[in-house]
Image (tube, rainbow, N blue to C red):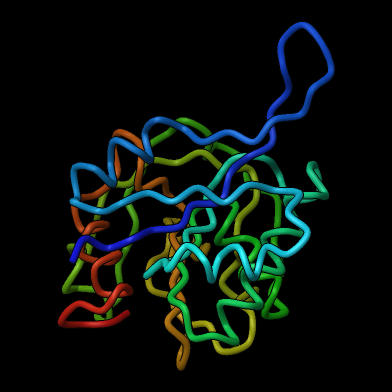
Length: 208
């Protein structure tokens, strides 16, 4: 059966008048199509996002990138509710960039500002626990201004990849089906191992 992947969306504005909109990059739709996965879009402003997510019958929830945390309160609220519900229901979760930051904060972690990580590919060192997905040194894309410092991981989270300054670029939860990456799996320059990571979260032969 084709895996079903629920994707959260960013908040954007119409160009000539005030009209907030939910949107998703075509990159996500293209990438999931290449991976034989079905994208399912989750809008913001739902009165019951938990019930909506259940109704989708998703195999994985992806908390996508875009929008700084705090810039779009409606999205922050929606994604935190979705994350909490996924934890309670056992649904697998992948955080991407902003999504990784949100998950870390949810578990009591912290963020710090970082320079030189917007549109600048770089190498990350990958720990032994993720060598089934990535090489020990893997090139990734980069589009963030907030980082997770080495001592800033939330409770239960384990670092899986780090940048040259020691900041955490990927992590997984010790007991829950939750993983996160700071790079964008949907964009050009993402490592090929991202597909294996998603498949493992969905229920492949190995898990994060």
